[in-house]
Image 1: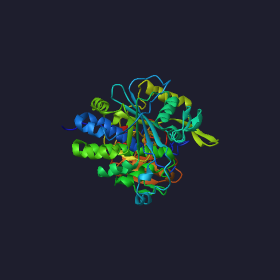
Image 2: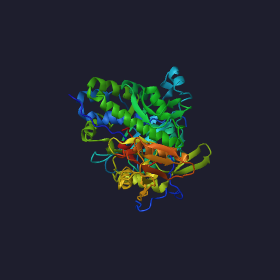
Image 3: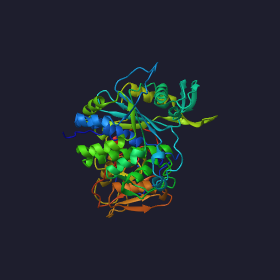
Image 4: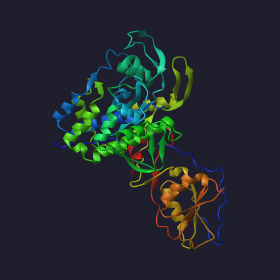
Length: 497
């Protein structure tokens, strides 16, 4: 039986280039009107597991899924739980990732800089909400250093009874395993968890290799001496080890953990696109190979079995990249170090409550604004780039045409195009202050063939002198839709064109 499958690709930063005052404009001609931690967090492998196991399960034979189901180790994270939040609409799945570097070979540890001992705690904690109509998946990442208060419990290692006490949220697993983790998350979010999935990162590298690598594109070099990541600008096919470096890195920009999480999203989207586009998931034998690799380190609750996977997979066949959305809990800052805990991340209580209320009410988290098909990636969002357009030709209305076209693709034009003194400019020119060179390159991408001309002291307002060579504006979109902020985005905003 052929496999019919729907996949959910999900769920970086220059500051806004808004000049405090506009620089001098070219003088208009007379007679013509005037008209921008080093420990890896493995969110990618977690959501890849749910994507492959759940969303693809609906199209393959029941016997195949049953065979895969037997490979999953079962846990009971809901045993004897009381006073749980009320159930809402849709399905909530808690995905956790544990540090499994003790299963990596010595050579791999050395090559991919995976030194240190495993922490036996959760590197990644995410709540995945599948909407009741099965048309949307919302993925919320909980920072592992979040301040939390775990309920009273018995330590699974020592057998010692503990009263409720403060910890970092990732320590709940070390003290009480899956059950305490679920209890803590439910206590903090007031979201009832329906299913639990857990795995370590060892299968991540192997899965990427089974798929033949994954393609990643970047408009600027990415280098992190801690992980060994070294990617020039351009498109790259990453193997499992390189992919591990990519999703671990947090020293390639100023966004730190937010940047790392967002790169993980981009990689996940690319990984799922690779799985779907290469035909791997249409081949039952290859499908078994991929899922067997993933399942080598999966643990799940007893209620998340074959029938549930089949039903959910059947219902979600119509998913597209725009159907998924990804965000993280809004944070208000860092708490002062506490004895025995250290510094913790403080949630923004009001914003976090709004976020989790949306999950409970089955509401979307991100605005549904799909990106233009075929748009070129740029390093700075067009909305952050201020532009003044001038007509450098004798062609009537050219300045207005260029201004309108740039604004339609997102640039923040002045809407008052002017006329330059010259009327015989053949090649379109972009004049810019060298301090805004990244913005200038983004504008150059939208105006193929234009000339960049640096002007010291011009300021943040870029100037376009339209020439007779102008034909059209090329649609562009930001390589990093977040710009270092934990905003909610749809899957089509984090994949390569």
